[in-house]
Length: 218
Image: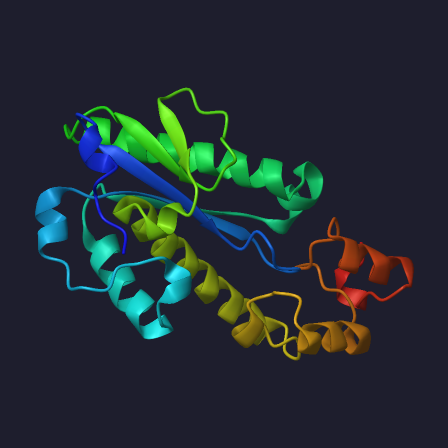
């Protein structure tokens, strides 16, 4: 289970950063930055973990706890247009920089202190101007990254559920835009929407075959 052992090695606020949705064929990539202090963590119920290991109900419960804390988080989504323009990796790393900088500024302005370290989940380092480190499997090791992963995952799932209502038939309320067999079948039947990532090879191949909905053109 993640804990604050990495964070405890720094004198000052430590920010955890994680993303949700790098791999899906549709929808944005959502990025969250989170800061936790000892007093807040002491009052948490057990169960905060890598968001992929948690149930939707548990994620929703912790999302409510984490987002009620003042100055403790930032969440943002990078739209499909930016993903297709810049590529998924560059778009994600730029979003991580933005989220981390926004939260660091918020902590400073609130008098909590200057960010001592930024912990990035994974092994890809964003171009941050602040002290930072990557943490492989960070959402299973760092409680701050785990908190960010829960916020990002919950927020992105809500976005995909809304988009599913606006674009019925693709099953986004279940597959969250990932390339499942049912999603691929829906693409063959219904075509590519404006929410699909045209820079991703499976979608690009479909577009070359002329599989595009009328509303997604232009």
